[in-house]
Length: 268
Image (cartoon, rainbow, N blue to C red):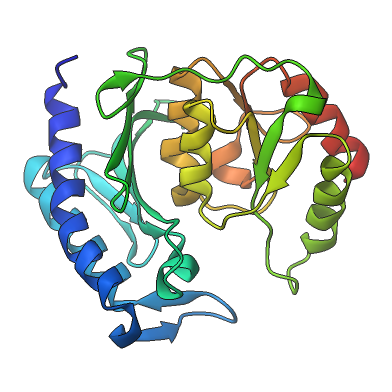
């Protein structure tokens, strides 16, 4: 399926940014790494990847704003559109040479009444050369081939993933209770440390669901659209649709959504 002009802009920017990322991953032992918070790491690769994405996307759409993990908010002339960027989702994996991380880019549109929605998304795994893409009302794709969520209906067969907050955060105990309860109520739980890629895997039918109560907009923006366009369902845990604001998210194939939501609410 031919890509739209918007998707060409996004994929070109991501491909260009990924070149240095592959090189840095190969030399991860020499990579400069520092702490940006109590337990949040930033590497030179994060900064360089984000810089390239910002430059490329700004050149293509000069009036759009940005929300980026490292640089924060950059206002644009167009108040309705901004890029939401996570240059390396899974930084901790990256700096430990664990091959599970990705670049995540989404385009957010804000309505006249202030409602935020994602209208285009790209998640790229540079090590596996897997490009997940989606545009609103146009379906979801992996390397230009249509993808769909899984068809599993039974929790006993459902493989789920989650993202745990650090132990010092207020919602850590709640998240741990959820994971413990869901482990006994499913085929298994995976916690791989890259939420955007986890969501892409839900869209591709590899995972049957994903949840977390502690994420930021750039962690989930692109993955949310991918799951929806692949036929899945996305909400906050215990309902609601303010995932980008609350950081609470449950994404699934839709068939198990209510079951998972009820269990998470019970275990919270």
